[in-house]
Image 1 (cartoon, rainbow, N blue to C red):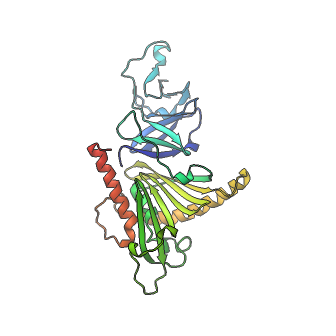
Image 2: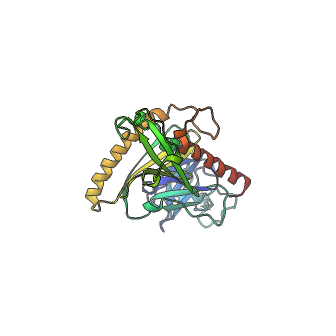
Image 3: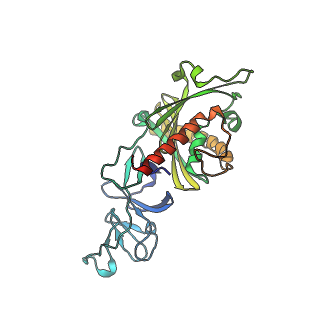
Length: 327
């Protein structure tokens, strides 16, 4: 994983007031809960007393209470109350667990994965999705490293083979370009696939007016969107569970309906279509070896893999920057 980044790790819809939620992210067991003021707290899900899972307990006065002996943890990870000592007895400083910086924005819970700091950067999201859209959402777990799940969404070569009955209809196997552009940590890539009539594919430099082509985007470190039209988008967040598993949050964004009943129908239809397409991907992606991708691997890549190559380069660049302290 890339350190010193904000990651979307959960949907806001999973956070229920008054109830702790246990998840594993970045290989760490976490417990999250919503406080009475609406903010989300996140600490390690292991009681410092006897190692029980705090997430199996309950929320008491904005604190997560361990189900084993009732120890109450505040959002900073410090034990505020040890019932066996009495509620007014001061708690020693060593009774604490690690806390994590989390924020809630754009319908996601975000976690800062990296070195704690006071001046945390802005959470990056797709500007065109920040307002005006309604969306439906579903999630599912894949047994792959999150990098593999992301690369699948950057792969413009696989469409006529994996999705021959859906978005890959038409047999457009020749890949022109693709054209890849970066704006900081935002990648936009433009797709121009055609039917094979014996022609050689165009290079990226040979494609004119590429801005008019169909395009998709990747916002590092773990967001992707398919820009179907100005009123219709498909977006996904790839939350790293550990080095071998990823939770995918898939959203169907639209802005042509506002009435709740109509939106629910559109959301349901959009989610159904997205599941069909995603499961076509899953059937193949889960067979890839190794589970995790790297900048240099045992693969023979082709020119159409440029978005994947660019992603790997940027990922390595960000990892190196976090390691040497320049980020």
